[in-house]
Image 1 (tube, helix red, strand yellow):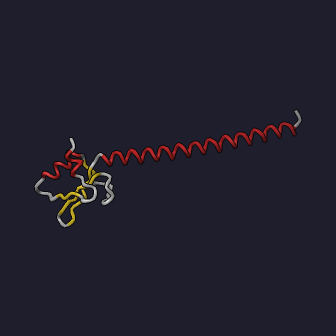
Image 2 (spheres, rainbow, N blue to C red):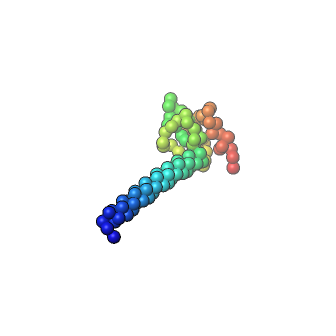
Image 3 (cartoon, helix red, strand yellow):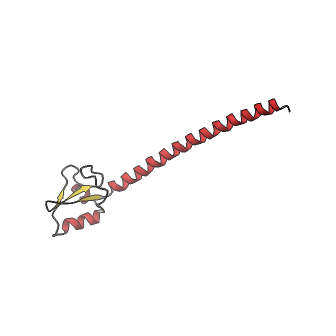
Length: 109
């Protein structure tokens, strides 16, 4: 085979490999975005099953639902049982958030 034909074949192969690499990278970006969306959804679901205790201000602690946006602290998540214990603790003054109404979720069994 003459060098010009071999060169044409190598160029065609290079174009095909370039296309394949770009398609693979696009697929990787799509999958990375999907993984990130699923991670955020799982984090949100975890938060929604919890409550948040906002640290005391003016000697009062505020109880929020886990997904409440009023207090955006990344810490303070507690389980239902822990929230009930905090409410029973006489040494704490715990108020319910008036926006997210966490009390209704605590009454559920």
